[in-house]
Image (cartoon, rainbow, N blue to C red; front, side, top):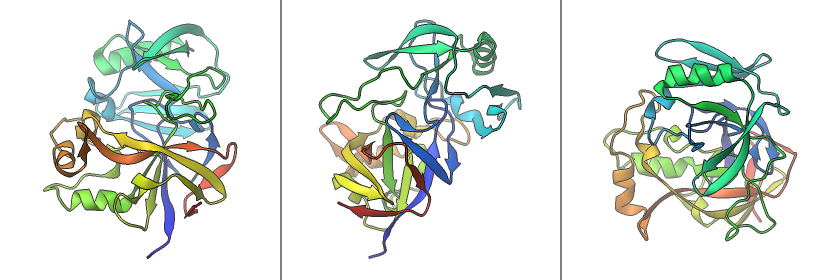
Length: 268
């Protein structure tokens, strides 16, 4: 059996927008540094995602010294967002599923740009590191926190799991349909389902629960178009109690350390 190796690391600076692959990242309690600390919210304060607005897939993101660069792939319009961790501005209450969090709108010009580009009235808001959002207490062991992700700070998926799925599809899909933070090679398909305590390099993690998947996985990240796959095929062999599972939600027990592509994964 080939060793388990961390092959990809992804952050998603703005919730439900395209991800950025990085070689190395810092582990924070809420998730990887820079992961899902931003999101769009509507005029009621509710979070906005590709579920209702699949055209969010059409914005490319990158990070440089100037900040977070957002490019509308269709119009080629660009925006540079100050990505500093101590941003201040107008505070709002926002809702993500059943959670209410305090967020900050640093600059109305960002919100106006996104409103025009996405085609809906919205605000670009930031979630400061000191603001509180607890993970589901049913799965917490030490009052762990999460950023603006749906429920948990980290998501890991094996390349073997995707290969198994693609062997059943007429048109294969990329891993980006599932928006993981960590991808690994080696091992059997879906072996991450049962992981409880494991290390990536020297860093300790705890598997929380399998990740239930939604219609967001049916949005083609290249075109922004919705279809029926891969959810239809997954429903035929990965469905339990009316939920379709792919990937494992994870909490980091080693914080403020770096994690790198190529790190070996070992079970504790």
